[in-house]
Length: 114
Length: 215
Image (cartoon, rainbow over all chains, first blue to last red; front, side, top):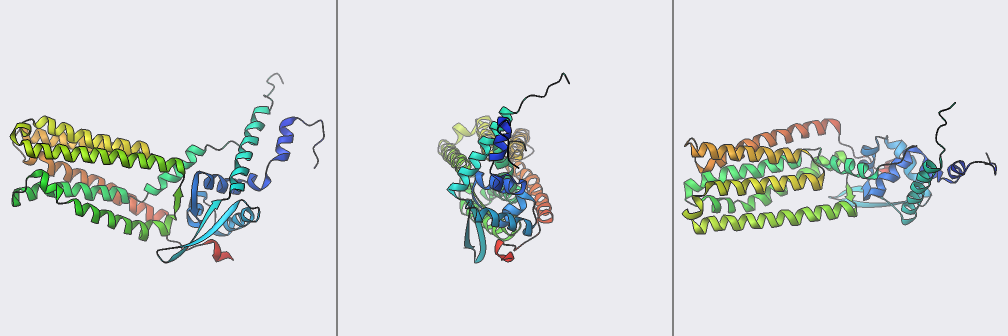
């Protein structure tokens, strides 16, 4: 779908939005990792309420997109996978937030006369 | 597609760390040591203040047990996170405030011991300082850690300490009612912690799941 030149600005913003982050599940993951330094797989699973498979799929996509850093550590001899946003991931999320705010600002008010 | 309230998200994520009730159990154990100390004072003639000081190593033991419980119970169920810079500076601020309060409390205790009867006769001052220390500490912790029930714990301790002092004036109890006040507070807070721990274990079953399980 190509946006016509005559399309309003808020529609153009939606077209330009980062679709890797925009998916609700991945948005939750990225938002969670944005507010902490890092978190392990189990913590993210508990906070987002996702199943293991669903979470793994989203994390793989984010890692492939260069937004996620995966670091395996041994904590008390138990392997734990710590996940954190890369600088590109943090920047992408901030840009996403700005675009969403811009979208709501540019969105025309509902015409009550109709 | 609404905007995300990052502050609310961070508070919610951070608060889950306290869902296990282990901090409540640790606080209850620490208060219980306050209960035992005055009783020891009578038996070994140590004085109320010094009988509390000798328990300091036991607080470290209690904290060590707390850390073991976190590792064995909480982490396998809830996972781990490393907090962000904003929360880290809040916690550092809390640690400094509590350290200052602890030092001032110790100095006050030393002063009471050194000046003996002169200060001891002012029972109201001793009670007021104890109430202030606990209320201030718990309220500060509640604000910095976003855990509201800590304020209620502070209020509970203040009410019980005042009640204990009143009973002491009327001759019903000894040691300013401290063993009774802190014993009851420890029981209430400990029970709360236990209930939270049971609910936590039911809500979050153990899991060894890891991202690489799917590889």
